Amino acid sequence: MSLTMDLILDIDNNKTKYHVAVKNSTRERASEIWAHQRILDKAFGDNTYTGLFIGLSETKLDHKSNEVTEICVPEQWRAYQQFISSLRAIYYVDIPRAYKNLQQKPPYIVVKQLGEFYYDISQE
Image 1: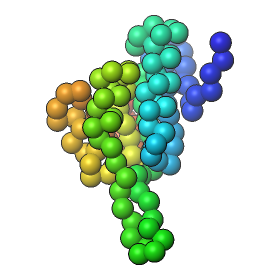
Image 2: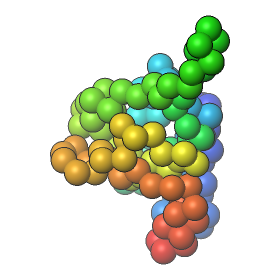
Image 3: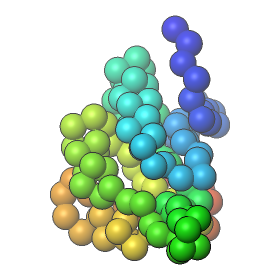
Image 4: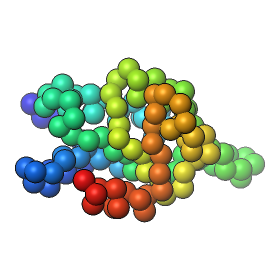
């Protein structure tokens, strides 16, 4: 079986293996991140690969008004987290306002600044 993923990190046999989706933004492709994690869970067993997402931001430019707006779907993300698979954390360069509080109620989705990614994986 072959499946293109964004980034798979298999550091060594004693450490966690990571599935890291890296995108400028998710927009309509957010479900891919959870779907790829689900495939890994089914193919290799739950918790073999820890799912993470790293993104730049979730904005679009209105070319008529030159206004930048956030494009976010937090309730869709909650459904993905609950019914498709579970991501350990999501890291952004610029965290969208709509995603800052996703860890406040179930299904919990941890959203952090990108700088915390390096600290978090070093603690595994």
